[in-house]
Image (tube, rainbow, N blue to C red):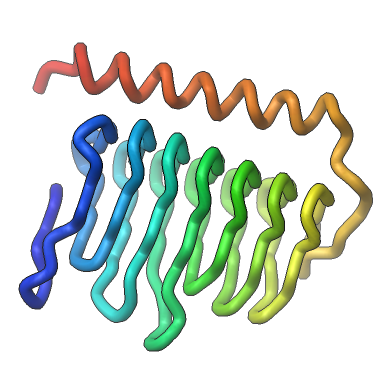
Length: 171
């Protein structure tokens, strides 16, 4: 459901797939070929949420923010099922694993991988091209080429799935 809030309607590119049950509220901008899956909540009521192109926000994800700190998500990003993103910045081609929690002011570098279930603390920075995991998050190592290729292939798959859902889902 796309909901205007305080006179601001979400700005969603026409190619974006928004699944039934997803709630997109207020100051939210989503770039082309991205997808927002079932039961996600993107609540742009305090500050903007900007999502780049070809980014997938998977089922049950919640995106919100504190005053004066927007949530900025780059191009070609994968956000796994049930993640919580709060006033954070995620650079291009990053992967946020299922159930990960990103707290206020954290920054995820380009092509970084945040493992499933990881808690990224307030203000923490995960460097580009690294793998972070744990509660709290610790950078464990550099991402391998095989891992980065899997992330890229997964993102491409979600672009295709989103396009197919948009074309063929009947409600």
